[in-house]
Amino acid sequence: MAFASVYPHYVSKAEKKGRTKAEVDDIICWLTGYDQQALQEQIDQKTDFKTFFAQAPHLHPNAAKITGVICGYRVEEIEDPLMQKIRYLDKLIDELAKGKTLEKIMRK
Image (cartoon, rainbow, N blue to C red; front, side, top):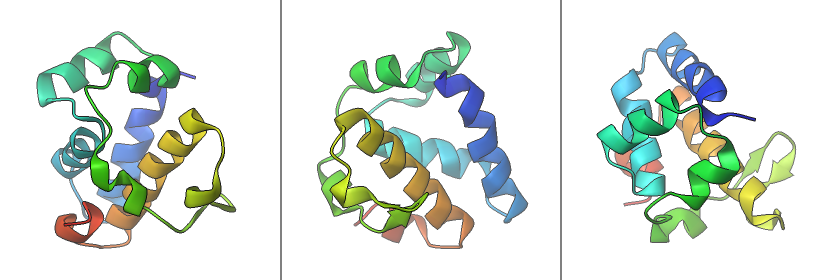
């Protein structure tokens, strides 16, 4: 599945709750280490999730602090590394849509 096909859903979910595309991008960049230009290139290239995370500069060290349930699974217990990274991102977008501050979302 292409990251680019899911990205608009992340933005839509956030905007429906009064958040912004910029906040979504900030969260994605925080998690993956991409800068804004590199993130846009991944979207434009319609990169799949496997490649998106494989090419990410780095997964943020605080990603391990992301816990909780998303889609019925505890993110900290997901064994497949790729699926865990995808669910980390899903969880962060959910937290944004639920009104958490960026500081809390980014585990500062």
